[in-house]
Length: 279
Image 1 (tube, one colour):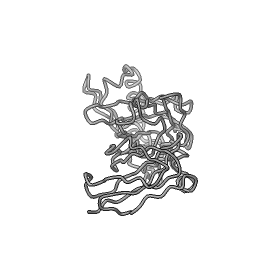
Image 2 (tube, rainbow, N blue to C red):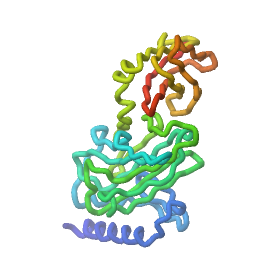
Image 3 (tube, rainbow, N blue to C red):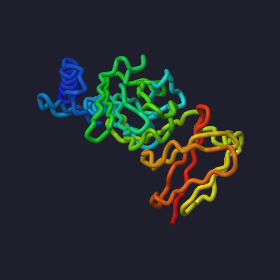
């Protein structure tokens, strides 16, 4: 090992020691995927992971084949509280795990992010920035982070009056990084959302015409509730009661042309279908 490489490794260790002695308070941090910037003393972010990989392990390749998974299908519900795990899958040794997301504030209130046992050794921070409505999480470690196992849990509370059941559209504008490089993101939807075909058959559910210019007709064999969301997760129509008697007609004239998500909710299960409005 040459002298410069030795100095860099020693420097990386000192950087981690400095970071570890700082108060673990997300309020004093501006979190970025490429490192840390501490606002209280203007400590500019240095990506310890990038240095460690370049110096000790050689260059690794992070691309869209490496993914961070938001595992809603493993969500745990407790009244109006819900938590679900995050993990990554990569064929590289990973020393830094970062992500950010926005969420549907009409349905959810962000609570916290807690570490699972596999993530306990990590130096990690999270912060919810109310200015841009974005949750950010950043972490690093000198030992590789376990692959394919839950690292952290994201916690939310449901807004009063909403159905306490996650939907894959509740998270959006996701960004993920492994070893400081961009990777892909995967939302694994709740089980009930993944059973669309079975639910449609069980409920005798049909939506027509699709595409539509002004009205959407819904047939269903039970009472249910309907919501319409834009693709960025915002509710544009909500609390629409559907009756099992006859055909329910939904007036869409006030909505602009585009793609929307229709959610039909009954007895804790959700059917989701995209529709196109073209006037």
